[in-house]
Image (cartoon, rainbow, N blue to C red; front, side, top):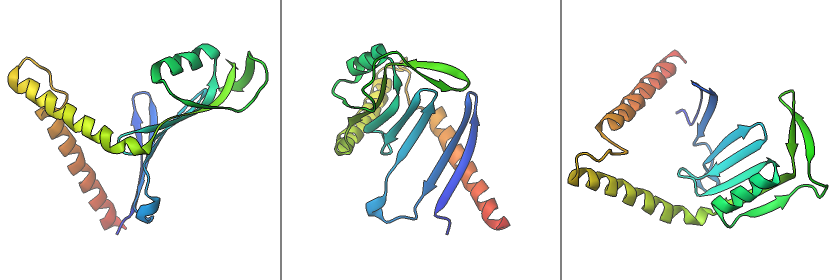
Length: 164
């Protein structure tokens, strides 16, 4: 039985690494998506993200904008020095005011978020039934394409099993 899978996928803008494992007890089960950028990284938690952690180097106006967009966030500052700091990354200077870790959301919100998503999907389909000019988010084309990709992944996995 294969209980861990890893794949590196090339998209138009770069590589993405995927890892999926079923080798830990349920009590340790978690889902995380990590996005890495020049100025920091973002970790999203759960299959449908309900919690976010951002660790990075931000300018004051970007931190304020983030607070305006997201609302109630927990901010942990990693230094107390003055503003207009400089770091070096990707062979260039990065100017920043704050080195912070920001947390937003809670895993306790998972059930209500899933309810919102299912409700929105049903409303989208109902709008299309009432008005055929409505453009559905999930339609027969992308549903069939998702199934085709899943079948292709299964065939690839089965061929891998035969080789090993």
